[in-house]
Image (cartoon, rainbow, N blue to C red):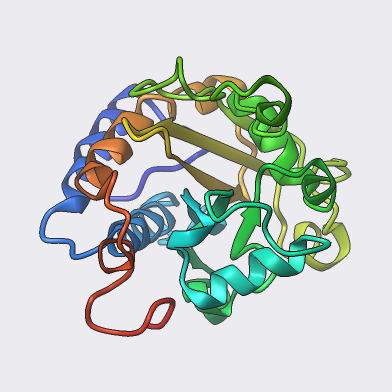
Length: 254
């Protein structure tokens, strides 16, 4: 059964939440779970009669310290910086799961620009206006951590973050890739939701939708954050790459 974003209901939300909670069963890595989450939402959000998906692209990001990233993701993070990381503990928003219309959108290692984004540097975030606005709307600000020495997630543990919602994608300053992405793929709205783990790492799931998403519909996705948290929870706090990436292959490869 598919769930239309044009008529997403409380009952749809309840069913999706139940299915998302199950996606951690039998998984061997956080990447494995995140890919299942992105694929499930991409495949199940759509028109049940036509079988067409409502989303052009669904992505699942998790934060990880730079030291725990695979070499390719570390390279991506370094390219975004004017110099190398100031600390191996630098927090990076890293792509763990992706599903979409184009074949390259279904393999995380084929992402270049958004594979891993350092969050502690305002100059870096200036290069990524969507990510900057995402963090602001979700209610976390890692750049302020440098001055305040406080953890922006300390009061958010085990709670859903707020929503990232761009109801009108066309012309939005937060989505600069208008000519090459928003317009040709018919993206109408963007929605993101997220949650915080006990380790203070967090995740966010972002939907790029061909359907208009109202604020009322967007609010129904807040409870899904708890289900995604539960699906990923068994991999929280494990620093080794073995628990982050699939054990059957090299980091970042399928």
